[in-house]
Every structure is written in C-alpha cells, then in structure tokens.
Image (cartoon, rainbow, N blue to C red):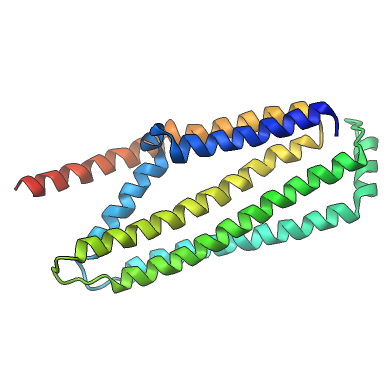
Length: 235
C-alpha cells in the first residue's frame, strides 16, 4: 500500500474508535439516543415486573433476537463473499482499470482492502451472535422476575434490564461495523474517497445519536418516566 492508503486506514480506525468513545464512554454519552433508550428498557422491565402476563414482553425479546439472527446471517454471507472477491481478484482489478473511472489498483492493496471488509463483517458477526445470546439470557431473566411485591422484585427487574441493555449495546457495535463497511468500499476508488466517506458516515451516526428527532422523542419520554418515579417516591 501507499503511504496515503496507510494514512487513510489509520484515520478510519481512529474515527471508529472516537465514535465508540463518544457514544459509549465519554461524559456526553448521557445525551445520546442510546442512553435514552436504555432508560426506556429499565422502565420496561420495572413495568414488566408488576404484571403476571408477559406474552407481549417475550414477543418483543423474540423480535429482537430475530433481528440479530438476520444480521448475523448477512455478516456471515458477506465474509463468504469476501473470499469470492479474493479468488476473482484479476477479473475485478481489470474491471476497475477498464471502467470509465479508470482506477489502477495494486494487487497487494486490493487484498488488504478486501481483508478489511472481511474483518469488519467477521467482527459484526461475533457482535450479533453474542447479542443474540444475551437477548436469550434477558428473556430468561424476564420470565424469572417475580410479579409479587417482594423486596427483591425491583432489583431483579433492574438486573434483567441491564442484561437487555448489554445485548442492545453489542447489537449497536455490530450495526456500526455494517455502516463503516461503506467507506471501505469507497477505498477501492481512492484513499481520499475512503477518508471522505468515513467522515460522512461518522457524521451521520453522530447526528442520529445527538441531534435526531428520534433522540428528542426518546429523551422526552425518559424524563417523564423519571418525573413519575420521583413523584411516587415523594408521595
């Protein structure tokens, strides 16, 4: 690879790490859509613990599991497609060189780019697979939560919520890997398009977390939950 390709790759990895830090670790994570939805999950489990009929709750867990199953299968197919790209390297390189953009691709650089794509999808597969398993654990903890007004009921429901939140976090990491595969596709054109596509995708993901309409609605509802809890505690 050229030095420009190497710099673009470093920039991509740094941007990915910065995105994860901002959304999952930094003090600004409390302002994100993900954090607001985590509060909804906690409220969900507390409400769930007060009723004996939990068919709707288990149906939601099953739906979340099926989403993970779909994305995990897609990621595995994408890894297999990567092996197909490697075996058809000559044909693909010639197609780029003879296309209207007339891009000249170095063979070793082509292997690196395809390898990065496969690594992203493999990473996503493991994240989706682990999220699927965690949602299974969350469903078990949901059913095991007592509906009687026991002293430990709220604590058990809170632990079920945290398991659900952990599953959602793993799913989010896998989904980010899917989105970040788009800039890697742009890398086949040039390092500059790779860097530009990385910026655009990162900006879109940050906008969803910090400035989207969905975030405003989720945070507004979460504040209502908190206010209702404070009112009950005060009463």
